[in-house]
Length: 323
Ligand code: UFG
Image (cartoon, rainbow, N blue to C red; front, side, top):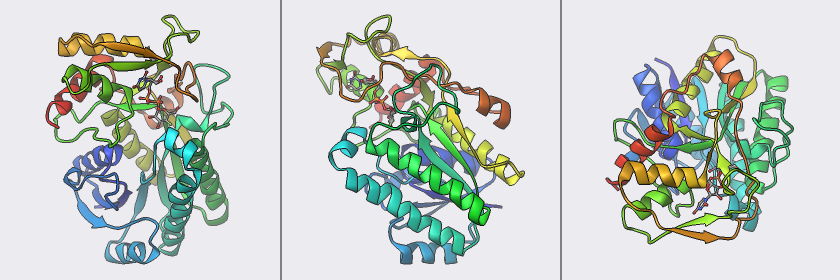
């Protein structure tokens, strides 16, 4: 059974990946410092509490388990915070990842699946965005992801490390079995915040801007179910194990929904009236982000199966009622 080190395995996307790895016959080993991750999310495989920024802890972990491949999720992921505290992001997302890569090279681990983001593209010049689109991130968070992609490209040339960078669009939904889900503190993402209103925890959802050049004036995003993301990680790993070349794949549903469409769907699924507060645009929000997912479909054999908007919101709501 292959041992897969999953940094950030106690987080939202990482924990869903551990479940899929386990179900598909791999042994996930979560490394997480539990700053944003939750211990109770680690239900599949082993847990090693450690900070990716701590070389001694990582050395110890790599010595304890024979690691065959790494899935690297551990990172800070708040775009707004990255604008205010860029060094925190460069330190955690870049410096600490370099630390991980040093240990990985020492232990001759040759396969890396990297958790990247559509934030690497910046403001799109064409929609849908395919992997050839220019990479021009507009915030430190997106820049850190781009930097790691570039470092991996260099490591492939220099040391033969094979990697896949997975550029997620809007991760959403929860485990269809209801075992794990999204729990951020603070929460900034649209769907859980709308569900807070449905649950009576918040009075209204702020809609950030209604004057975009989109059909209803609100921003359009490509929401992709976290279980579909998780399955793509296993396919990416198997692509590498089968000799695939290092590359990047977009992970999105390939169609977009506006903020108001999300709110309407939440009203329909929860049967609750959602109060809306119109507010100004949030700085840095592009009007439309929609993926071309054709490369992942073609080369990985990936197929989003849980990503209808109804399934995303139904699974998220079920989870939301448990927390
Ligand atoms: N929005 C609101 N009100 C809210 C929260 C969000 O109107 O209270 C809107 C945003 O303006 C945006 C959409 O809902 O148009 C989705 O916002 P999210 O914060 O849920 O997600 P983002 O699209 O901003 O962020 C996602 C990922 C990031 C990634 C980014 C790339 O969560 O990790 O896409 O742009 F960096």
